[in-house]
Image (cartoon, rainbow, N blue to C red; front, side, top):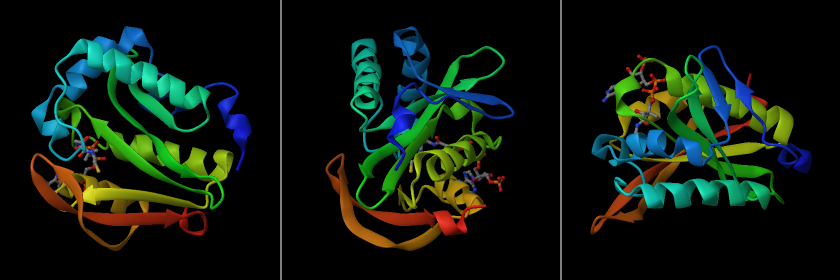
Length: 185
Ligand SMILES: CC(C)(COP(=O)(O)OP(=O)(O)OC[C@H]1O[C@@H](n2cnc3c(N)ncnc32)[C@H](O)[C@@H]1OP(=O)(O)O)[C@@H](O)C(=O)NCCC(=O)NCCS
């Protein structure tokens, strides 16, 4: 694994998006993303309405990057640099060159291929620059949009992690997907 990627935050450019580090100036935009019940329905956390919590989240993301433990990009619309979502690597297993991804986008821009575009850049970075061999995603089984994004990118379903997420008083099954470096074009 190439730890040099942590020397300065690795910005990623796509046709419509700039994946960049979030700063405190992005707090209002991120609040707009994460205060939406629809957006948070399939996330591990519920909607967040408190700007102080958002600011702590952003500070936490910066700290995790500085400690070389996680990378989380803000997904910015190239036209005005505003944050419309986020995506990143966590649970990074350096010994086995694997990591899990998570991602979310504000509901107003769903269905335009934006997350497919963002994750494609993130996978390219993960395999070619960071040196990952295996990338994992876990999805609640009703989250059809997320399953479609993963399938479009070449992820394959491995199985069901039965009742592995406890959220809002209920256990939920998660589908586990993965993609290997040898499968990524
Ligand atoms: C899931 C999510 C990331 C998808 O982002 P997106 O930018 O809308 O995804 P894309 O447009 O790249 O692709 C979505 C695909 O799923 C399809 N889709 C979305 N919802 C669907 C549904 N309910 N039923 C069938 N297809 C659906 C879209 O039509 C599109 O397919 P297409 O390219 O063949 O038209 C976004 O909806 C989101 O952030 N949701 C909330 C947070 C979340 O669920 N995160 C993932 C946790 S695992």
